[in-house]
Image 1 (spheres, rainbow, N blue to C red):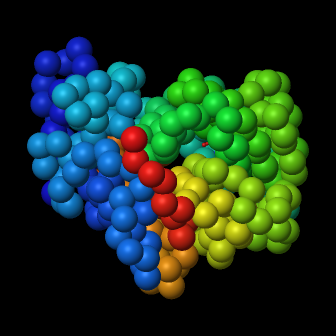
Image 2 (cartoon, rainbow, N blue to C red; image 1 turned 180 degrees about the vertical axis):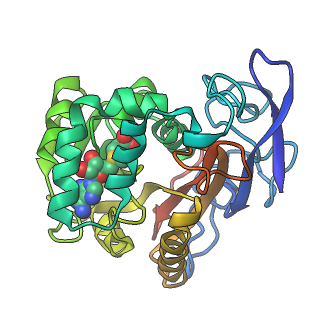
Length: 322
Ligand SMILES: C[S@@+](CC[C@H](N)C(=O)[O-])C[C@H]1O[C@@H](n2cnc3c(N)ncnc32)[C@H](O)[C@@H]1O
């Protein structure tokens, strides 16, 4: 099921988004398994599977009648500024090699060493890749998150250089903590001045440096994937999230990540069935970032697709409306 939206400045209609399930139906927020289905906040019904007022094809921070339809700013379809799909995908060989290296299933210490070495060039390189995950994740989380945002405490897991913090800060979040396993990436994140706390943490090996039920929201953007952070980290993310708090996670849907994605979604489903959290959104985005090889490209578009998931930890405390 795909949605359409206007591509800014091109006057064309494009297909770019697909709702996979668990569509944000704000009348159901607060409806954890085993709880009475009391609405936590009433945001207007979004019919499951999308629709005129739904989220399909939506860029969550664009204007419009429902504030959610249309293409993302700064995006161009394949054949636009990204150039046509083709040999080498029009990207420098050094960049393609760098991406391949960090996604290779190397030992954790080796992978983090690669990130240390990439840190200074990371933002420039991901801009060339038209990497939109931080923007899409922050926009989706902001849509789900109840106001006010300024005092809400957020943990940005695998924060890298701070691209997610930049997007969250733009949307009014001010209390941002970050963790990452790469000292080089953390140094870049520190230089942004956007995080109140930054800590080195080896995910999958060490617990998160936070007490239980500490954060109003937790994000993991661009790090849940093959050769990156294991899906076994999910219970630890839930541990540090407050009841009723939000988790914003992303993964990629390119061929070499499909096994990981299936594993991740199985773990997510298991946690949902056990009543640990409820899915609010799983949105597939076709133009997630540029592909670095033809094999990874979705149907010759020159791009790979990805998914943003928003979950809410159960039980969700009931808030009075009004
Ligand atoms: C692709 S970057 C994403 C950074 C940032 N979230 C973004 O979207 O720009 C992946 C980050 O995950 C971190 N990382 C990967 N595996 C990790 C692990 N096991 N423990 C801690 N950090 C890890 C890397 O150091 C890197 O900063």
